[in-house]
Length: 105
Image (cartoon, rainbow, N blue to C red):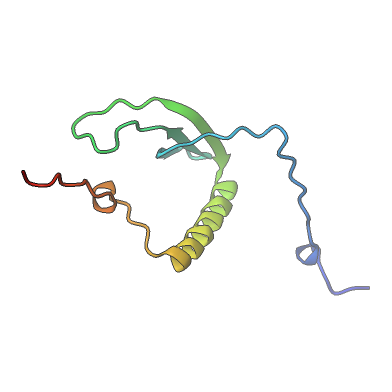
C-alpha cells in the first residue's frame, strides 16, 4: 500500500477555448459579499480626465474566494515575470504617458 494521499495526485486540466469571448478593459472594480468576489470590468475612454466620469460596466466576473485567491496568485506571478523582463509597471497613468510639447514659434 502506498503512503501517498490525495494531495499527491496530479490533475491535468484541458481547456477548450472555442467559446471564449475576448474583451478589453482598462478599468476594474472589485467588491465582495461574505461568499463571493465580484470584479466589474469596463472601458474608461478618457483616463486623463479629471472630475466625475461615468463608466459603464460591460463585464462582471463573480467567483468564490478560493478561485479569487488562485487568480490573485496567478496574476501576481505573471506581473512579477513581466516586470523582471520589462521593468516596473507604473500605475499612475499621468506618470507613464508623456504629452508632446509643441516647438516654440
